[in-house]
Image (cartoon, rainbow, N blue to C red; front, side, top):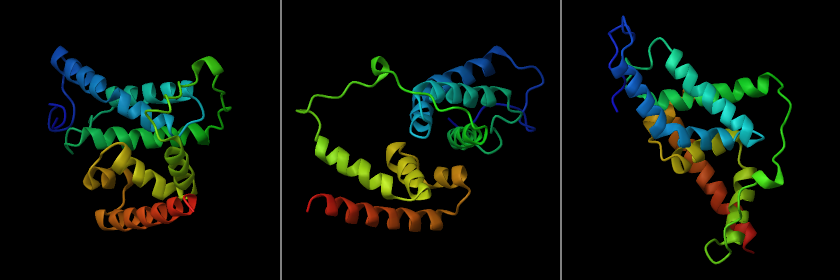
Length: 178
């Protein structure tokens, strides 16, 4: 999607059903991705749902809806990143995950649990910046140009961070197998 078909100033004079429909379709297509992004950063799934809703509300309320820049997905991730940061700035109490709400653990025949645990441990040892770049690149499959728009860093800097993080992951995961 190239962006929303809004006027040159980023707004329509009268928001119509066509624009509402485009925003609705865009939200349906990307809700799960944004939710997963938020869920990895927040203490509970309820908080992740609330923050994800706020991200899409901001999209709807936004003057430009990122039309002039043509990268609405990068706009969403930038907004999600900011709303997650706002969540922590507000010192909102940490929620807990009820046992009934806990995600089901996949059958061991389908998942290499040792590998997943080693990977989770290695990711936890990266810096916040390195984890975010790795998640956006490999977890969300965003191209570096979009990650650059989300983080405000140059692609050159991102490639350096990615290379360093991958090297550290390889090293840390190697330690787990010895």
